[in-house]
Length: 329
Image (cartoon, rainbow, N blue to C red; front, side, top):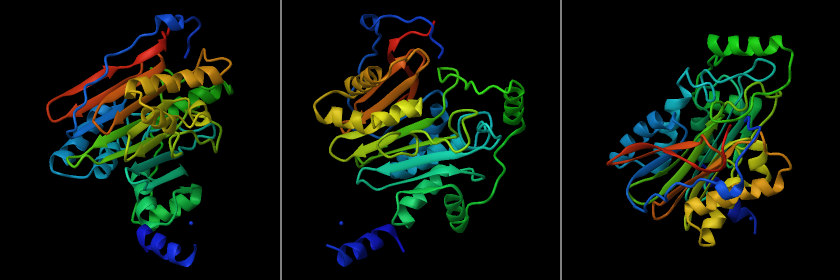
């Protein structure tokens, strides 16, 4: 049964880091606000977003939908064995197991996510199936895996030799000191797209924090934390230390800040400020937000330098460095 059919029936049946020193906040850097343009456009986190954007813009240029552009664009990164933060080749957890999280959302509040998914290469596509083929928003663990197999996805060993060797090296230390999340060691790719009809969608996919405690889930699959889209306002996504992003419902906060009148860049910056206010020690804490409003205006801001986003439309493809609060030393 399709999700919409289920919802209709239900309605009838019921009455529903590493910074040892940093600059002061007065020294914070900003990037110019990217101009508004209500044309097809894709923005995504980090340099890996460049290749993902190419596939997404190809779909949008053929009059494809924003939701399909997000899914297929993120599939590119999920299949890249050289990207150790996402999908195939992703870093394992402390037990040596690769577990994946993903979420996807359109601008009509339809959304789906998966957490703790194993042995499926494309969690973002499974998340879309959750959105479209079930009455649920989130499936987890073995339930998510069984659902994926039912939907025609194939079992695949996601642990590459390179990632296995890195885990073995870490394990030798018998150290539970996790790698810092910074510009050299980040853990997500997130994307926001606008199609030719002005419709928006967002998605996020990750293998999570390298060598995390077995069972850990971050912000990426949580609607309102890792991603959020509102039809009247726009969309936002997050990257960095998921625990801190979850605590302020980061992406939802950015969208609501835009609703209050802030530009996307101002909203991203204010969300980072909230994390500063709610965190006792942020010396090793990198978080970043990326947002696009319904006019097509884009903003980006992070706690520390090093965050960047890839932007592509019909006329250009570029990597944009984020404004930030502090500089890595």
